[in-house]
Structure formats: structure tokens, C-alpha cells
Length: 310
Image (cartoon, rainbow, N blue to C red; front, side):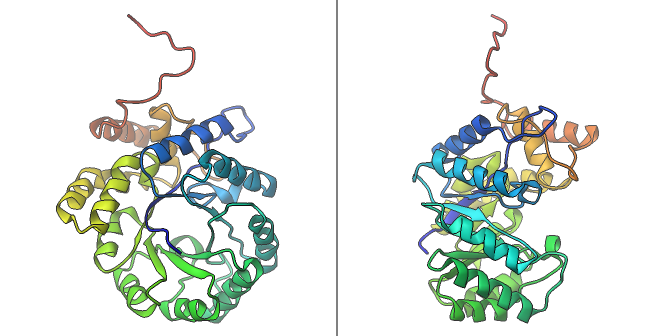
């Protein structure tokens, strides 16, 4: 896998129509803005994309929209996660037929709390089902209640050549370090946490799959690019400036804060699907204040039909 740098775990915009239908025009505009801002790749239908609340038809449709809007300008990874291995394999085979998909990103099986051997067999079955499509493992124990240990990742990399990367969101730098030093040199390790990205790159990670780049794609991608090129002064300055945003995106359950800021920027609604709900009024006020201080609201698109005062 050649991909490195900053990838955006892109939100899935919904219309405020009472049905929370997917807003295709907003999604296409977001994809174009991300690419024009210099993002290195996109991740469709991950946790931030609310994949868990999309039915199968919507999930595939959303991926097709993002693929079409990207038009081959950047790689697109597609999320495909399930806690039933049989269901995962069926959905992954559907996904592997989508022309142009650069990789399939799959998180630990959630709720079941499988052993390391169970996770090994689960991910190995996925890799074999979609071979030669590259597979990116996604370790996010805070959401799934299962940690994918480095030794298991090494076993998977040895057993399936198309398992080529991992998004590591355990929040443990020691685990990231062990991955970097244990895996083959061509295997890519990406931070799954914005606030640990520079530290992860410092010990050998290859980039970041970001939440905050939804709101600040140029700035976050520039931060990651600077770190990868050993321009640590520039990277740290950007982290210092946007570190508050990294934290704010998790003041309430992701992606509700991200969508709130994007709505303030005029780029999508703040609609999330149940069981998620929009942030409280107090949190929204804090988000608006922070977005203003960071200058995120300066270049918000003018809503269609708006005349303004002259």
C-alpha cells in the first residue's frame, strides 16, 4: 500500500426532512472541498460516517457517491464492519465489486468481545473473501470492547498479504510503537486519534485518519505532512492551534460535534441519526465560540437564495 498522510473519516450528511435522508449534494460538495484542500485520502462510511445507522442500500449508495465525487483524484477507503463474520463477508464481497475502491477498512467485531484467536480468524476470513483488495484493520477498543493486540496484527500480516495497514485507535503509544517495530516495513500504521497523531508519527506511524479534518482539511493535512517531512516546528504549531478542536469533537458523542461545526460553516445540517442526538445547547454554544476563534466560520458558503444586506 502506497497511501500515507492524512485521510478524512468523512461524515455522512443527512437532510432535515424528518426521514434523515442522505444529502447527496452536500456530500459531493464536502468531497470536493476535502480534495481541493489537499487531503490525501478519504474514508467512507466509518464511525464518523455513522455507518452503524445506515441500512445496506444506503451504505453502498453513500460509498458510490463518494467514489464518483472523488473521481480518482484521491484514494477512497470504504468502511465495512460487522460483529457477525458471515454478514461481514457477504457485505465485503458486495463492496469488493465497487470499481476503484482502494481499500476496505474493518473494525474489531463489536459487543461479542472475541478472543485474539477469534479476531484473527474473523479478519483472515475477510481478507481471503476480498483478495486482492487491500484490507485495513481498525482497532478501536473504546467502541468495540475488544483490543487487537500487536502480536495478532503480525500474524494477520504474515497470513494475508492483502492486509496492509492498521488504523490504531487504542490511545496507547506503547502499542503503536510495538506495531511499528514488529510489522514488515511496507505495512502502514495510521493514528486513529487526532490528538496523538504527531506522537504516533514521531515513533514511526505513517499518517492519520482524522475526524478534525472534516472541519479543517487544509490545516490538519498540512500538520501531518509537516510531521512526515520532519518539519516538527510547523507541525507542533498547527497542533497547538487546533488541539482544542481535536478535543472539542468529542465533547459529546462523535460525530455530533463535528456536524454541528459543519452546520455552522454552512456545509451540511447538524442532523445525526438515533441513537445519537445533537449536542446540548450549552455544548453547541461552546462549539460555536471555538469555531469562531479558530476562524472556521470566515469562509462558510453562502446559502442558496441568500441575498444579504448591502
